[in-house]
Image (cartoon, rainbow, N blue to C red; front, side):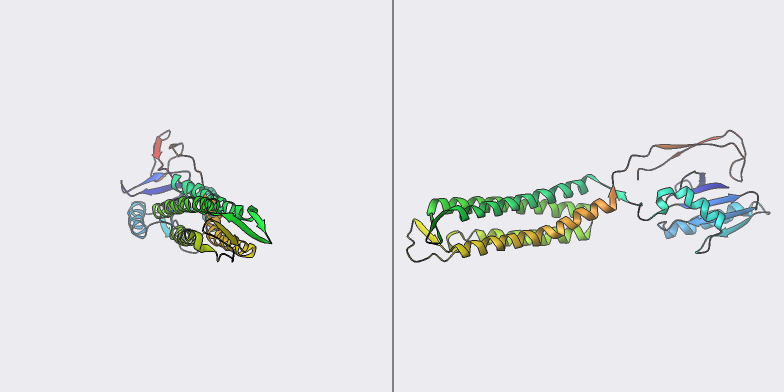
Amino acid sequence: MFVYVLDRVKAQWIETEQLFLHDIALLIDNKAKKGYLWFGTKSDLTARTEGERLAKDLIARYKSYELLVMSETIPLKVELEIQQLLGEEADPTKNKMPRTKTMIAFWNGAYLAIGCFLIVIFINMRMLFFENYNGNIRVDQASFGNTIQLAVILSLITCGIYIFELIMGLINQKFFLVICSASALAMIIGATLYQAQGEFLFEFLEGSTATVFLIRFSDVIIHILWLIAILAASSGPMIYCIIAIKNTTEIKEVRGTRRIESTTPSLLRENKGEMTVISIPEK
């Protein structure tokens, strides 16, 4: 059986030994005197119409041949031939998209954002190790201010990373990546504004002065748990995005040219030993 794919640019059939789901193919069975027109599941509807017209024009030149347009019912031998030519393309689980540089950038940015806000939590946890005063926390204004200021700066950096993630999602034109990035950005902005309250974060206990603060230990615990909740809520969708990119994409090699040496005549090839070079676009 001889297999040809439609070249829409040249409006002609080109012999091939591999098919893709976006192809329109014409399979010629010289013994059965039949031509089978196959449409890939991802083929363009306009191309299908053009392919059917060109196939009919070709078969019409050979009175003894019959053209069969493949629908849901495909002869077993033709289906086996198509499955073999499709290779991994025939298995939807293996039909992965190319992993672009922007997807990789999104992947790495998500890890960086999660790690950065995790550091923010560790910085806030420093307050647990301030001086213990009757079961509460005693800290001077400078130490408290430096801790909060450093946490706010890193939170702002995290916001910047999520803005980068949002841009990468838009470039990739993936709605899910955009939604996850935007929601994570909104949560981190909220956490940043929350921490930026500084001295107003806690209700200082009686005995506090303008330079020394007394804070309930339980209030600090609640404060840290709140930040952990924000980390979990913002990181969950981003981790899911990373898993989705990993499962649906792969790094694909650049395809060059495919050489086919004709050794047997068919409807579209009459001279033995003819060499056809087909350029395959990068997938």
